[in-house]
Structures are given as C-alpha cells and as structure tokens.
Length: 235
Image (cartoon, rainbow, N blue to C red; front, side):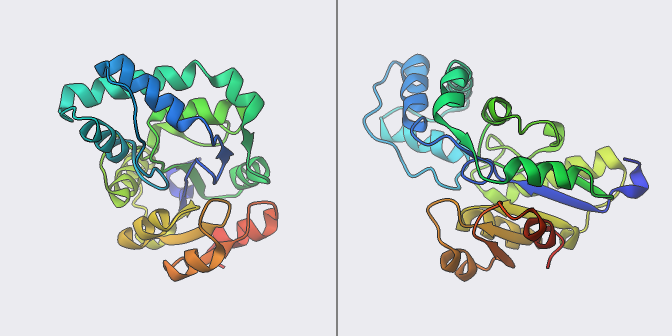
C-alpha cells in the first residue's frame, strides 16, 4: 500500500474478539509469577479488556511483590514463554472466533485500509495466540498497540496510531480509526481517542452493555462478513 492509499486504520482486539483462549490465563500467570518471583499464584484479578501492565501490576502487588520495573519485565518475559510453550495445546482447546478469519481476509483486500492490533496482550503473546489459528497473515504486528505500554487502553490506541502514521507517512485522523473489541474497555478507549468504536458481543458483555458503553456499532459476532465490513466503514 502506498502512502497516499492509507485512509482507514482498523485496530483489532484479540481475546474473545478474534480468538477464544479461555482457560489458559490463570495457568500462564501462575507459571510466570513462579518463574519471575518464586511466589505461588493465589488469586487472579479481573482481566477482561485490561492491559498486561495493569494485570501484572495487580498480580504482583496482590501477592506482596513490589511491581518495580525489573520485576514487571521479568514477569513479561516469563509470561511470553509460558504462552509460547502452550501453543500446541491452545490450538487443540482454543479456537478462532466465528468469522474472524474471513473478516481479516476481506478487509485485507479493501483499498485504503491498514489493519493491526490494539490489545492488552504483549506483542509476542498476541502473535502466539493468532498464529495457531492462521489469523496472523493480514495484520501488521509492527504498528500495533500492546499491553506493556500503559494501564490505560486509550494510550495503546494512541501508540498504534502514531506508529501507523509514521510508517505510512500519513496522519490517521481520529474519525478514520476503527477499534473493534468485545468489552466496554475497548469502547471507552476508542471514544477517548475519538475513534469509531465497534463492539462485538462475543465476550462477557452483551450487545446492550456495549451500546450503553457508547459503541457506535454493535455486532453479535463476526460471522456476517458483509455486516462486519459495513460496521468498519462506520455504518
């Protein structure tokens, strides 16, 4: 895509928007906490729609471990390793969300569109989650917004938009940015940035909750590719 062609930036959430990896999170954090600090995981904070930095900070402080920069970095490294070691198992017991692959492929063929990720995950974790289900081909991982950047979702969006603008040599105005996710956190981050918020009711939040959060468009899932493309065009 040439610089002049880049007109719309689509930012996908990962968990319960593109993939279903439920049942693994606590296990990954249990191993990461043990490997990084030697502590035993006793409780997990809420993770839905939150960033890895926020979750990791809560896990550490909740177990009496200071969330200093070095310890957080050690947790991130251990977490990425834990996810990598369960890729085969995830491919057997996890799944792509219905229609996710078709939506990504269809959008890849749309003129003037750049698509990447804005996710609470770390970059390596996001890749490990998408690759087993062949969902990684059409997203530009290099310009994504990831969960090590901030505890605030809107900061991840701003980081991704900045990377995309620099790579494509063009400014992506807020109204040309579309954020797709399954939680009110995704919606709130989009609204804070001034972007179009597309809610997908495939997680714990239903369509009414996503609408109440302010989503411009709400989809029951990604199964209807035509509806997805219309939503991503702000319709």
